[in-house]
Length: 116
Length: 116
DNA sequence: GACTTATATAAGCGAATGGTTATATTATAG
DNA sequence: CTATAATATAACCATTCGCTTATATAAGTC
Image (tube, chains in turn yellow, red, brown, green):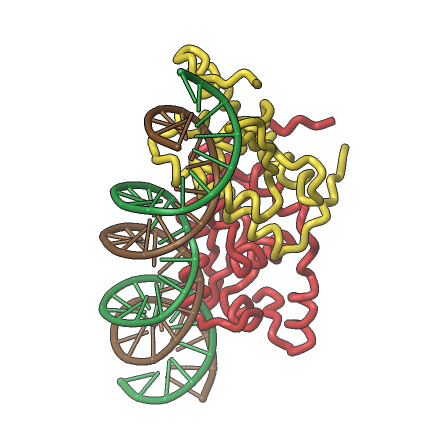
């Protein structure tokens, strides 16, 4: 039995959970469980505009939940596993149904950026 | 290692997490981990009005996260342990710092309704 | 350099959120 | 029956949210 005593205060937790309380963001996070994902992939994945995606990622970045990595003209986002809140974040995501299908669909459409 | 595969869809999770993303509600939930709590106790606990407390509880009730039990003129709220989402709810609350102090403070002020 | 692609930022807008005050509603006390 | 205490609901309001369009910035292509 792993009693995951997390290192988040109640206020920090509330801020994180608020961001998690949106279907788009929650799906994005779950997709990132499978590894880094590029902005344009998220754009292809959802029915919202690119600026909307950018704004979601910005908010996740501001809370240190995700980190960005620039590769050429692309920006890849991934879960920040070094963040103090990561155990908390992971424990939640782990309980949600996989969103791997979203990545599969991208591959079928040839829109998956397989690194560069 | 207990792989708590929860029975919540991603959309359900997002709805629940949205409610958890508020400091007042999150504290209320954490307090209810210690057992049922009466509305007037919550009112004494926070710096917001009674209707505000009532509205928070209503939203938690609507998602089946808490249940109410009327005892005389009081209404006690507690975590709904029979709800399908309870394992998910519990796994989150468990990681947050205890809010027992809130109850202690009430006792000191003689405002704790010790059942009836 | 000019053109395209990927991303971010700014400004604006309708809907939702979290609070308030005012007003029911219901139960207990006298 | 009246008065009080506990709770819920209604109406309102300022702020935040999640999106949009328009525009800037930066890298890759020709």
